[in-house]
Image 1 (cartoon, rainbow, N blue to C red):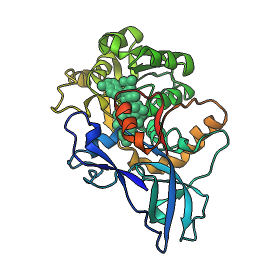
Image 2 (image 1 turned 90 degrees about the vertical axis):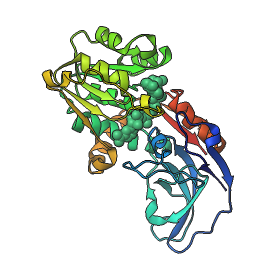
Image 3 (image 1 turned 180 degrees about the vertical axis):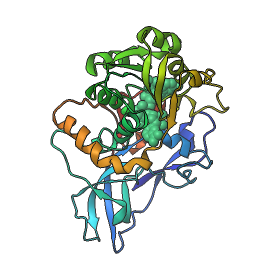
Image 4 (image 1 turned 90 degrees about the horizontal axis):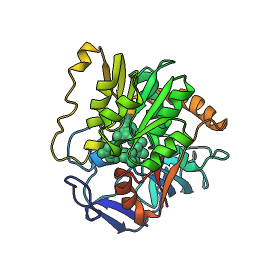
Amino acid sequence: TREVHLVSRPRGWPEPADFALVERELPAPGDGEVLVRNRFMSVDPYMRGRMNDVKSYVPPFGLNEAMTGGAIGEVVESRSPGLEPGDLVLHDLGWREHAVAPAKRFRAVRPIDGVPPSAYLGVLGMPGLTAYVGLLDIAGLKEGDTVFVSGAAGAVGSLVGQIARLRGAARVIGSAGSDEKVAYLTDRLGFDAVNYRSGPVRRLLAEAAPDGIDVYFDNVGGDHLEAAIEAFNDHGRAAICGAISQYNATEPQATPRNLALVIGKRLTLRGFIVSDHSARFGDFVREVGGWLAEGRIEFDETVFEGLDHAVDAFLAMLRGRNTGKMIVRL
Ligand code: NDP
């Protein structure tokens, strides 16, 4: 079986040479263990942070060992009463073709009609819960709000804007990095949208939201956050979810330069980590799962094929080659 190791810690942008595809003997599952054949694995922005040897809310990846991450697989052999061959399971032993581990590492999930199992890594999984909790609990979305979301064509952002619309936002303005993505946002998702590569975000946002914004869902940081602070109405609320524009930076960034506006405008900028909010998973699945079943939520995936292309998928995601969730099919 094969797995992907981190072999050197990237400084700045990661390169293919920082990773190695390693062949190894598949161990037989011991008592209480399960052997799973992975079908889909996730590549996520937070994994970039785990490649650095720094203290954070998740420990760094070890060198010369398989990386971890969200995956969906099928039980092949089980030596635990709770799981049977053929069961679909969600777990965190991605970046490998097979996983052998104690049964408690795996959570059985039900296949859903018309929805691919990979949805558990996106719209019905961690990114989906991030969008739900960030928008509703952290930013406190209210009916009639004007919402700005960056990374709007990605896994989290595309759902943020759709939940905002379904929950009564007056307008959703999304930002993304290409004209194709802008067309996707306006034509498929019904947002207003700007291409941040076509001019300064500050100007683009001021033009798109002449009456200001009330909520900002930040996936990007940097000049997007600065533009949002500029555009905020009084008592505006931001969910600070990610800062992908800075994940490969080698120096601390000097934005937002206009932070002092937080005072006069009485703004709330609030960071959060989704794993602290698992108690909301049931509400999330009921509400978003319901919309999904009714066909009221669009979700897209960009799929790369095979573990040989997992690193390519990760690097392509960092560069914005994905629309919706970036997935690797194994
Ligand atoms: P996405 O599916 O949004 O993929 C990443 C996207 O980031 C790319 O498609 C690209 O789109 C965009 N991007 C890359 N570089 C830049 C840049 N310099 N400026 C603006 N946009 C850029 O990823 P996710 O939906 O999985 O994650 C989105 C954000 O949410 C990330 O910041 C992630 O770290 C964060 N996150 C936080 C969690 C938490 O608990 N706080 C949990 C999950 C995710 P484009 O073509 O538009 O540039």
